[in-house]
Length: 307
Image 1 (spheres, rainbow, N blue to C red):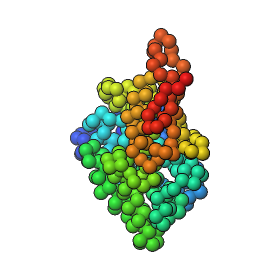
Image 2: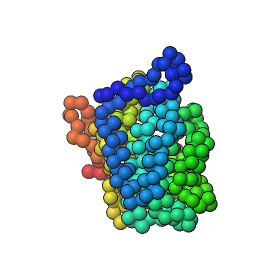
Image 3: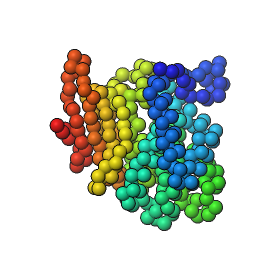
Image 4: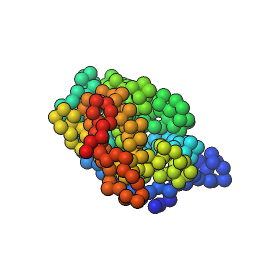
């Protein structure tokens, strides 16, 4: 375990220079480092997407929004991480999903609409997922639309450095703002890129992310079930469902997290026919837990137990 500052607002905003701190598990920090490596590797084939990533992580406005979002969600509401680590982890998931969709020839709305190519579709997804939670800087309620407002000046500056054509730049920003607005499926996304953002957001549910609110005293089914999720990996599926989300849990309580955090989002998006979820249990300690469910698979919109 390592102690980190989860938010860095100005000292006068907290009084006497105080800073909210929480314990960040080493495995979650390592997941963030791996996420950065994954983002850079997958975006290497897409120069505009790679450029957008560098501009986003170097923008002090983005960093400020991420950190105050964590102060709001973790410090005030005892929710899980909504800051810079969550942004990177979800971005890595999103680009992995996009890579598999592109390989499978799936229809992407940025391409279908004539707005751009696969690089532009990946850029939309990346920017949408990295900025999707910044509205939490003001309040959790309505954070989707507040995020749209906060993202606009940032995107105007970033996209102006990537796109010369004003009309294309405007369309790209519209797609990104739609993804931010729809990431919590209220309303549900209509575009494939927004669907990827929503599902990637649902994939960040491992025990490391839940550790901070749990250590700060949150004890409910949401925090307990999240602590049961050991890992979430995006792997290649089959011809009909090219994306497989592989979830490993150490305790059957994790099935609640999979249902509430991930499957609801999949079922509400255009990805529902292209994604399969596989849930697996680690071998339980017979003295510590009675196994309720071993393995499960998403079929027909519902998790079903399999032998």
